[in-house]
Length: 376
Image 1: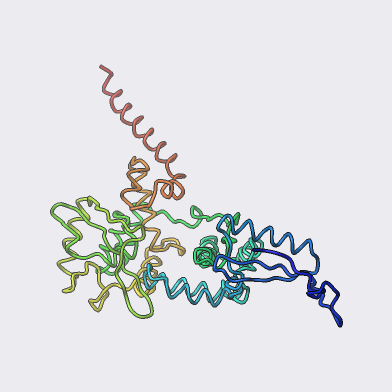
Image 2 (image 1 turned 90 degrees about the horizontal axis):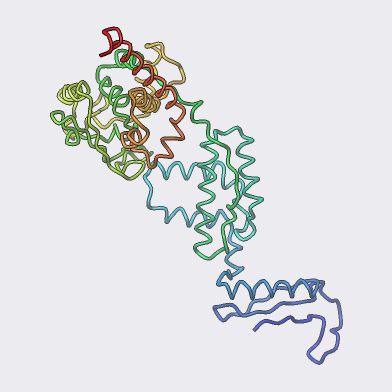
């Protein structure tokens, strides 16, 4: 039952003596747990509107215990982190870093029930104002959104305030570097022999850095020219861990003949007793950060390539080479292991007009070669 109580009146109907509270009207109601709850207001109409809202939430099954919503974001985030068991150590490290550096300073002491969409919009605006990359803004926002969504699922708030939030667009095409075949060869020549097959497998196989580091000898069949991409290796302060690929899917690649032969020679020369295909100079698992700093960047400079070239750009290069050879978008998606055709289109769609032009030029050249011999 719900009703409104006049706190100024006595049980006999008179007016209480002494000082009177400004919050004269007390709304009382019983929650689904059969416990009575109250809230006081200065105006009777506000108490009535409050009870109408509570009744509606109770009927719709959306009522939330207000005491739970008073828990601070920071306290609940700690509890949420303890249940975040479905990610790799590297991903957990990234989540904790974003929480500590950006999310807690903004939301930390706010009660969960007090966080509104306007607060979330202000949070995103503040991240953009710090000139963070669009991808960093998105990843940081998603951490906050996951915490608030979990709070809604746990019944601490009625719904997540992360609705209608506009995020900055990612400028992927501006950040990419595409090498041609000659530049890939220059890089492979400039780098240590131990890592030559690694560079060429990235550029012609399109594997991610973690997938290359996790590649094992039994996943490579040089006679059948196949390479199975099953795992990904990640680094964290506590060491390395091997888990599923970024999309959680495995894929098989048919290697170019030269690359299958090169991998066979590489495994015979540098393969480790533990079964890793690509190894560090000490013979253990390849740690990408050390490789990138000590070997990749010096080779980029020695080959005279753009200073901003990243190792991941070799994967982009693979996509560009496939497209230039006339492969359509679905084939590129499967080869690179994208989660959807939309990912492929968003990243590489701008390359397809060039590919169509190249195909048209190729057909024109074929016609001219035939025409010179005479049309029959």
